[in-house]
Length: 239
Length: 296
Ligand SMILES: Nc1ncnc2c1ncn2[C@@H]1O[C@H](COP(=O)(O)OP(=O)(O)OP(=O)(O)O)[C@@H](O)[C@H]1O
Ligand SMILES: [Mg+2]
Image (cartoon, rainbow over all chains, first blue to last red; front, side):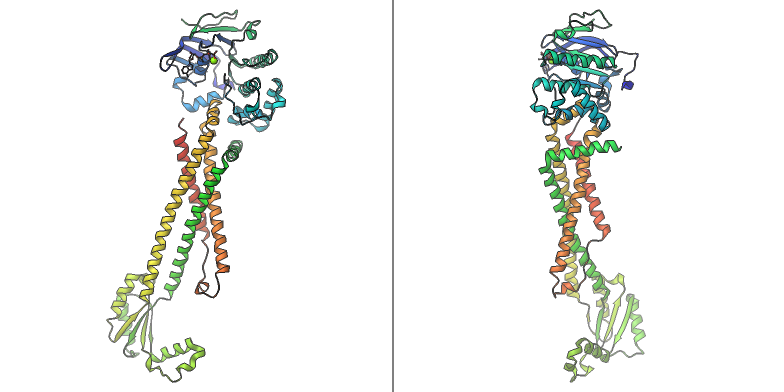
């Protein structure tokens, strides 16, 4: 899985990126951030600070107005659409609004990234079962996601993002609808993925997720980084 | 490759469940267009066939005032041959004409007992070469034959031939028109169906993109779908035509003259071409539609 991403460079390298939405909403301003391979990074900040925008820049859903976004050593602005698609197979994303297909059941939704990568059907089934079990969702396997509660939908979205054991996982407010127990399950899954080599960027308000850990944390405020507290300080920050 | 086809076929099935009324409509349109086209083609080919068989018996008959003496026959033969090659030139005397008539009448032979061969004119029968069997050349040939010494009248069924020629021509036009209809209707329906599928699947396609589906992953099922419609639609249309053909042959036989002509179904090569052509057409229509509606 890691063949797309060389070891000797940051997995994600954002250089002086600015995103302005029309007409003149500045969501992210002159931000620089490097995320090393194997890191688990928290992105915090108030509502409207620009967290979602930053994640969208990293997975090429939005293009920066200024600056450069590099993922796996590739400048996204100079990467063709076919290669972007290939890159996306290596990036799992938990969207803030989930982006599930309501007519498909939980298992079918989770299987999508693996089908797109032409995985073996048995492998797909066992991975789906495994993820459902980890998130305590096995009994909802065959239920259309449109009929699930928000919290259940969120866990399906998380399982889908994790399905391919991606090189990079972006999670936007992944525990926003979850009780403490479920949130802990999710965090356990993320840490397990991280141990297996996945790099994670988690955008969250939920202090309990990072309170007792020493993961690096960067905070956005009105599109700018304000503090970057963490004992595990790494290179980066806005200059 | 097998694994990939499996995913694509699974998608085809999925699309069909999601969107089957439109797909069925489109399939029926293909079927109906193929049926109409191949129906006229079948009639046309049979008419051409009949024409060719009648053409084999085609001859020009030159009625004469007097019999040609055997000594002169080679001379006249060679004179005719200088104008146009003939497969066969036959001199029919009054007596021979009379015997033929007797044979034709058989049971009513007694009708002729009071009559002698004198009332029948002698004639020369010219069987022109194949290359001469077209309408204008026949007419010129017959004009030439009319100038032979002692020739009274030349007959070759001109009126009948003319009508038959027009009829074939008309059929040819109809075949071409229904072929155009086939192309237009099929191309239109297939591309429409694909557009509707794309619209129905818009949110799904967006999410497929987000999880990294390649263009091929997204487009291949739609392409398969077009091909499938071509193969199924044309096969179904031809099967229907065959059923109609068999039914007509058994039920409309009777004692009419239709029964005496033997007619045939479309030869295998033509059916294969219709199926192949329709499939190509559908593949082409779906490709165009995919390109147009899925700008990435
Ligand atoms: N597509 C868009 N068009 C215009 N403005 C947008 C768009 N998306 C985001 N914005 C604006 O950009 C700013 C940053 O939004 P963003 O969604 O990145 O914030 P966020 O940190 O994710 O907030 P939250 O915690 O509420 O999810 C906001 O002011 C938002 O209104
Ligand atoms: Mg957000």
